[in-house]
Image (cartoon, rainbow, N blue to C red; front, top):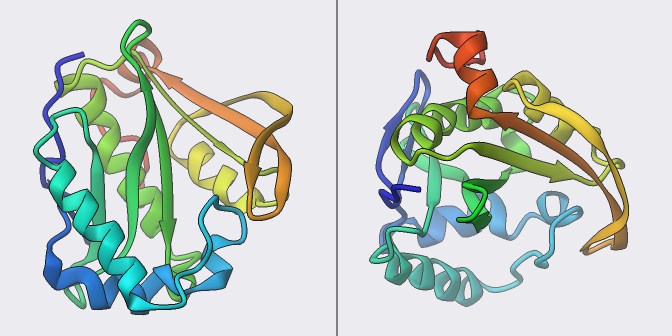
Length: 195
């Protein structure tokens, strides 16, 4: 793959960008302290802003690495990050990136996560030259799967007891999109029509 690092990506309602130290308070207020957000994730809700500060400072430091992809999902309307979307795993041999995301519960069911995900798809296929974008979710969290489907990923199956989260050992519903299928289906036009 031809790594570019976390570059700014502009969509209709969002700016996907690198985090800065100025985002620490907003991150804590908007999602990292929200236990509804972390129910299906691997990290617990932050009880203290110093935890959020440590995490964001490590991300800021990692931006020097061109293989590090961690975007703040900034809602233009309020000019604050409301969540994050990132590459949580990758494999060079197969040119595969695995995407994870979360946003504050106040902004659920408004299409923001789909808009963010659809914004990074052409970037990974056309600039980074990834061949496969994948993501997975706990079957008990079907709304996460709806984001994947809305952005053109295909359901591949349930991996039984293949993941872990704050809920313990859980099944994983796997989805993917291949570069060749994306180009055939879209002619390089972003997938999510209402993003």
